[in-house]
Length: 217
Image (cartoon, rainbow, N blue to C red; front, side, top):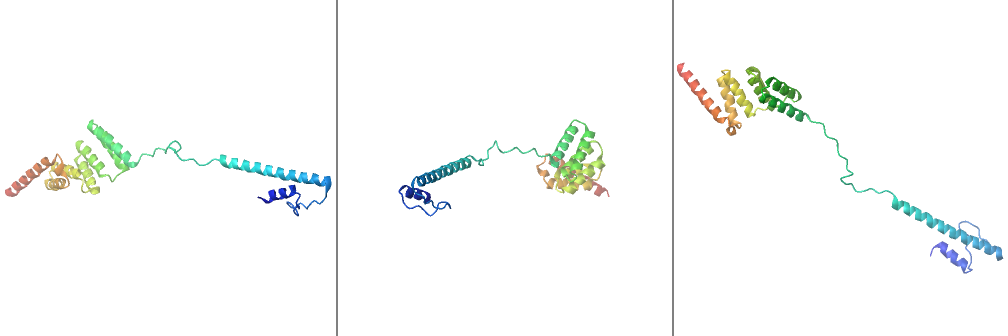
């Protein structure tokens, strides 16, 4: 039983009052006046209990209704913005458009688009190889050979660039240099290429030619 309830019980039984409740001096008057004061004191205490209970109930309700974090769901997770296109994506798009233009016979447009791609990524060997093919088809063997050499500078094991450079050197009459690149093509993966038989035949033909030239000497 609490101190307050114990005090009220003793007062109802006519027991001795405490020396003071809440700092209020004890009231010693007797008779009707004393009973009125006793009733007033009881009323004050009861009202205090009621007010305290009501305040506690309000605080409990406020605590129960306060917002609490909810579990994240698919609907509450925001959608991220689309990432900007990367340099590699732009290069691939330009090269694809350039090769499509070359297939349609528009070689100048193809060369322009592929050069724009190389401005974005000047170390891409595949793009240099594509530019070399377009330039050779335009009849510019020298610049085509230079493009293939650039491709091999960045990727020395680029089999197709070796073959293409070998073709250009072969057409320019530089057969010994051409054979070096033809053989590199076969060693680097050309054995799985559809062009391997043509390359082998051409190497054999140039070997025969070199042998005949040596006999004539």
